[in-house]
Length: 423
Ligand code: GLC
Image (cartoon, rainbow, N blue to C red; front, side, top):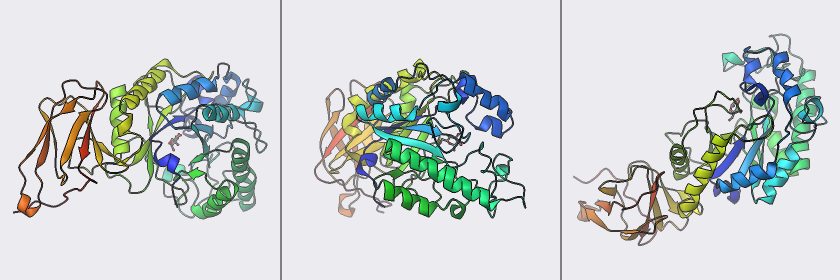
């Protein structure tokens, strides 16, 4: 599998969890699955979903200013409510809510007008469709999945109805999304309730790529996707291949008025640089209100992150995975020609910044954003045994409030010392 180059260099995407759950501000889908709410009470939110101030061009403009290169919209979450006028089920905001129209098409068009790639989230599982809870996987790895919205009782399986769900609803809706909106990326979720064979995932991948060969597929396809999707926490051992961390600005995915623990711009810059420094993209989530507006606290964070990315763009785009842990106390990235190393310093360094295990000579150090040139010297090392000393860079006079980036121009392609030390 070769990854589409746009995805590898995108670095930031915006995840949009938008659905009827924003009406009462309850957790998306899970609130009725877990019994906190009856399904009727949950679906009653359809009556309050208006999209009355939905301006996808404003979203796309904001996402572009945030520094994102793509965005992913929840076209159908596990609740089964489609945001487009699907022909395959009765349940869409186009036919059942005051919004009364397709919301996915305008999203895709607005993103394209702003030069962003289009990602569509689609939940394999559908906790509303009567034909969905008709098959059980051969073993239930997660006991909590034995839920009436997801599973039939043992012995009550209906293979014919499962087949109907799979071919008519699941495949049918995915085909609708592909042909109507021509997404660059399909972001699947909710595969855990069936096994790979029940979903016929291999065939799904083949079919999508036959219809639209360049579609990027996220990893929630039980082994048949293109990249890993860690969720909510920066991986300590970064995945080796391509990956993307999905992450919330507050605590919730969808809009919830009581979700006020918004991360600061500085915190988001940390997560962003930790992610890109280890080869991932950050998919940062916002949950618009039912009317289609984005809460100002989220918009401010996105603008702030965008300003940081703009000031430090040289360390973001056109870079690859930086140093493994141990060389520098913080994340780093490398220019694609591997001759410039970007060191991210979260707090203003008071004395010096030390980089260990570098064989190269450093030609020049400068601070991104201000252009200040910094002095450096090499301390220690065991040259006759090829153990490099530490490169000590003077502290900058002026630091970025959210994270300062030092650009180190090397005398050639980077060469790291990865040994245990001589002695
Ligand atoms: C989980 C949840 C879901 C959320 C998703 C985002 O799988 O089921 O509510 O949409 O993660 O990654």
